[in-house]
Picture 1 (tube, helix red, strand yellow):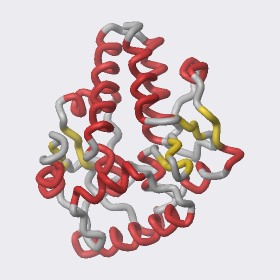
Picture 2 (tube, helix red, strand yellow):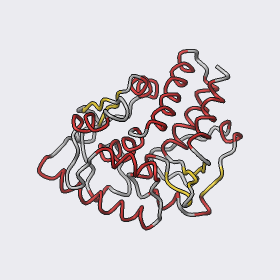
Picture 3 (spheres, rainbow, N blue to C red):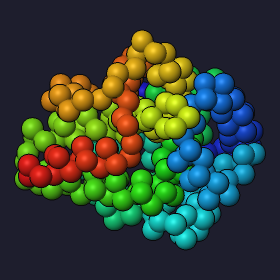
Picture 4 (cartoon, one colour):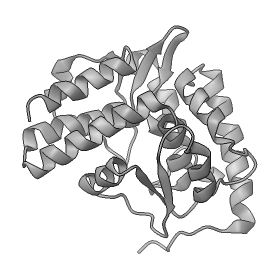
Amino acid sequence: MKAKRSFDPKVDDRNWQVLFETHFQDMQSLNAISSMWISGFAKLGIDNDKRPLAQDLTESIAPFTAYTFIQTDAHLILEQRDWYGMIADYKMPLTCFVRTPAELEYCDEPDIWHDIMGHIPFLAQKEYSDMYQLLAKTYIQAFDNQRTDLLAELDFIGGMIIELGLMREKSGIKALGSTLYSSSEVFEAFKPENQITFTYEALGSGESYDRHSFQGKYYIIDSLQQLVDIISSVRKRL
């Protein structure tokens, strides 16, 4: 049985600084950082030298989108219905520990480094937040209507695009997936042989996000509007 993970104020800030400097040097070397992420991150006032607090993040994001970040003492992955239920109510839980620098490449539990650096800068952008609200509400409706066929497609969107996807920008292909902002899997995602242009046929492929290993296949979308259109195409079939 794994030991309980929790914050350790004596080392968390140091780990946060090391993780930030190491991982974002890697992402810059790949020219992988999305302009949308950069714009959202700039709104948050995050100090690279210390772990941000939930209350501070909530206050920073308030002028832009309506999310409340809730610090928990948990380090478990929520069921999808529960996660999207919170997102639809503009709430996001934060897990209870910062991974160590030795876990940068792979951490087998969700941590606050991923929560904050992977998700929150995007959520500070209204156009992204609106898309994510659409996804959350569509998922809830499909779940409540027991539409397992559509849930499989929405799980593909949530895993293969929201967590691991890529997006074309004017300056090239950038990381859209939240996992890529907190994991060395970004190196795998930026190998050209692992990149695939998204087509609607992929929705019915049955592919799912394996949290315990690198995926090895990364879908490229053309724009955030295309992602809205993908979700809307599922919603129309409810």
